Length: 142
Image (cartoon, rainbow, N blue to C red; front, side, top):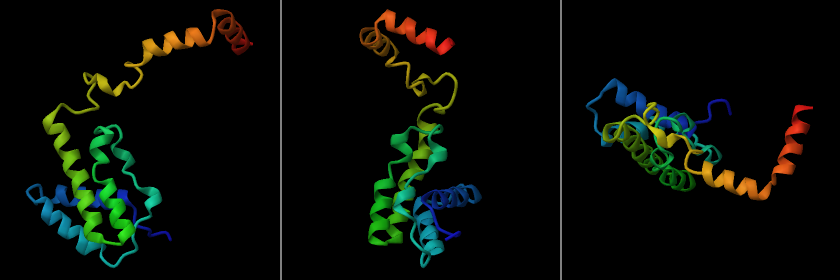
């Protein structure tokens, strides 16, 4: 199925509708999505993601509508799928307005390791004594 509709395709279409008319309401975007995709094969629930938004908005924002999209796929209801897409679209659009862009350099929370580095080092030193670390380093260099 080369023309298989994906959740990402539907989301990108919602973005394109918004880009072509910045004043369009979410309700109108939803209606347009339903009319454009009605009658087409439903997306696979195995590809229930919008991966290009991982570094643009927090995961809890861009994934907000995915449970609703999944329910729409399971019940084969385009209105439900479109509703979930609109939830995610609204979250993604509002995130930069309500806080600075997440991928801005001054935004530190994207460094997922920062918050656990100290605890990780402490636990690794208990778990891997210095003699074993030295042996591991020696084997890596060899």
